[in-house]
Image (cartoon, rainbow, N blue to C red):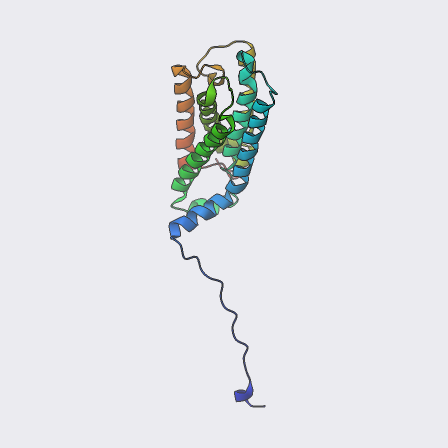
Length: 220
């Protein structure tokens, strides 16, 4: 047999490369690495539970106790957003990703807006004490707590402090506290409560954008 008689197998066609904008691909990979699709599903579950509670009257519909269940759901939605701060790549990503701060900022804002939007859909047409404005304020403020917590605990444990604050707010509700920093128990038109929630969210968003969530016990 001569070399001329040797027939090589044709090469397998390469998989099609990404044809979209590189920025879009980068954003999509970032969202997938933060398990954002799973977080969206978790937010949908929060909205479904809230809708069911309002429809079948699982909670109080009037009085100060009517704030309890929506407060828990809002805190749960904020905790889901906080957990999307976790990076599976750690320091290598920080060292090579110059777009990382912008991706952090965009993801945090988008997930917070989505959490509020999902809860808005859940309460549409239902009677909710305080309305969507109280829920939005709770989500904004408690998400800020979660973003701040992620700098210390990491993203996977960032839900602990938000849910601890929700438990504290439940106690403040039962004790009829009226401090602005207990914003979940305040009326929807309370200016001081809105300021406190917005300041906490802005501080958490700024710190998370610049620094990012903690990635290892030695990361200080």
